[in-house]
Length: 264
Image 1 (cartoon, rainbow, N blue to C red):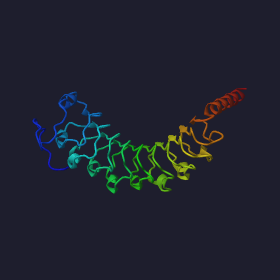
Image 2 (cartoon, rainbow, N blue to C red):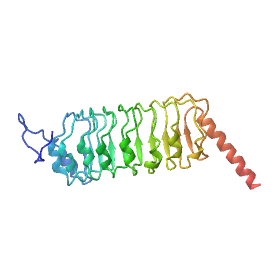
Image 3 (cartoon, rainbow, N blue to C red):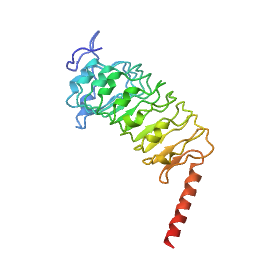
Image 4 (cartoon, one colour):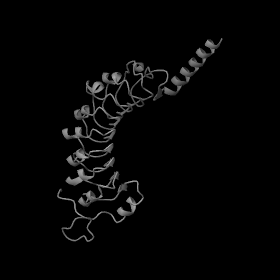
């Protein structure tokens, strides 16, 4: 892995660099800078991908069985979106952390147990999906990324969140924590005032605190937790979970009654 980028080889022989798929040029000819290679089995991405740096903005490599990436990947300086989900990556390649304009990164369904310190270099990142991995702890390097907007961490093994999260990640708008091992709602969530979407499905939470203090919240999903009643939330929050429909219908009826009284 590594080495300088060369031109796309035309002949593949013993020891030769694996060429890019034949339809690469055709895909990029439409002008939107998208290369879709998802589902094509390749344990390694050809280093010749780096020759596309001026034209490549979105690279989709989902379900390709990748176990590593070229060291030269950082040369894709125009890349905005990178999808590496449903592969076999045991750790995040350092080259990914050097992509200067990356805005969306999809890492779900790999074998990751954490993120390297160099991940903090991705200061342009707004969306991170790292669901279905083996995270036992919240990657603290994310606390160095205040501009992150959407964080998908469902189906991991998290038991809590760092208390510094509210101050360190003020830009967070969507947080997905379903199918983890939370036994209570982390207190720090109540201080994420900009959070609009919160998914806590399929955890082990028996009691919810008063979540009406989360003024920015618009959607709370709490299904498949051992709760006896819907959480207390603000009047504009949509709930998804056991008893949510009845709760929202009753809330709407009360709102209509209050409005009618004001008119009289």
